[in-house]
Image (cartoon, rainbow, N blue to C red; front, side):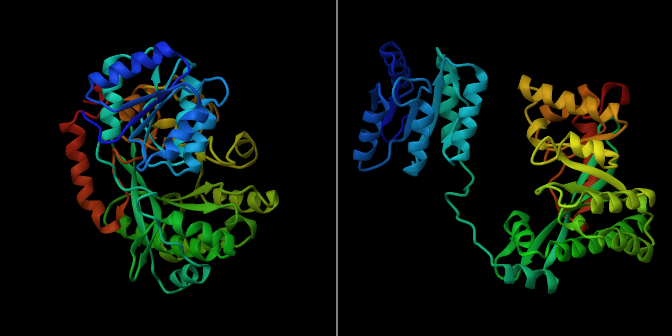
Amino acid sequence: MTLSRPILVLDDEPFMLDVLQHMLEQEGCTDVVCMSDGTSALAWLDAQAQPAQMVVLDINMPGMDGVEFVRHLAERKFTGSLLLVSGEDELLLQATEKLARAYELETATPLRKPPTPDALRAALAQLQAPKTPGRRQAKRKQYSPDEVLTAIQSGQLVNWYQPKVAVKTGEVVGAEALVRWQHPTDGLVFPDQFIPIAEAGGFINELTRVVARAAVAQAREWLAAGLKLRVAINVSMDDLATLALADRMIAKTEEGGVPPQFMQIEITESRLMKSVTSVLDQLIRLRLKRFRLSIDDFGSGHSSLVQLRDLPFDELKIDRSFTHNASHDARLRAIFAASLNLGRTLGMEVVAEGVEDRDDWDFLIETGVNIAQGYFIARPMPAAAMQGWLHEWEARLWQDGLLPTETH
């Protein structure tokens, strides 16, 4: 697989430089430049008329180490690919890969020394696979607080829904309401482009009211159609900072004729609690009315054991970053198991987010987690698409053999 521009190999071991150069040439990479120190390598990169196609980098070198070199690549807005090759332990390799991705560098799964030809070939194929345009290729539009507030007040926000299914039976037990902005000229705008603006602008409560009103109405429609789906809405600590949320939710469900047990409040902690008393006041009242309460994205952000100790949750959602690939990663598997056991011990229902592929699904069957949610099951969809998806899901359960053996 021939690469059109030079490849830079940076390693302080002459023998490893020879090995990597030979292996790359065997893969059809004819323009390979080998260097042994970071300063010289940066000077060479700066002198090129076009960026190198790829940098193959050892992370532990004297002088400028690989982590510092990654930072310099990011500062230069390097547009080529990065392949980490190191004899360091798996944790350090994975952490450096995460750092490179955080810097928005294109990178493949790191290789352990000494790399095999098959492993190198797989990494090159991964880097040459067609890419979906990301943040660097398509800069996203920035919206002002006034634009977001106008969208909220003029009815431009719509709820999409992502199903949740019972792992043991495949039954669809609920759906999470995920807000979208149907922009009049920009099309569908995703929540990470406007929710932080609403939080910073102090009008997240207005946004949550719109989402909750639509979610209650949708729950009523589904119940009338015979679909007993528990509908979840996301609520931030800012929403709970005043004493209005519980009153509104209780009133909305009473007006809509929706039993509270079919509504779920997922607490997303993008910020720390401002008032423990206000949060406790509202969550206790909601639980007394039989609303379901979930701690969302457990293990990430500010969600922690303190919240489990102090707040009356009956569901724990394991963050997607601990679910996807847990079957292949011992550290993720350990964190997932600890979170699952904690939830079980506390008598909570446990939901695994981020189920992206069949391996993730099979892993959940093995662990016995209660509920699953993720792209492998379904992407978020308009409410009108739910009925059609339900038929497709029923077919997949049997055609793809997704149910545990004892269920068949």
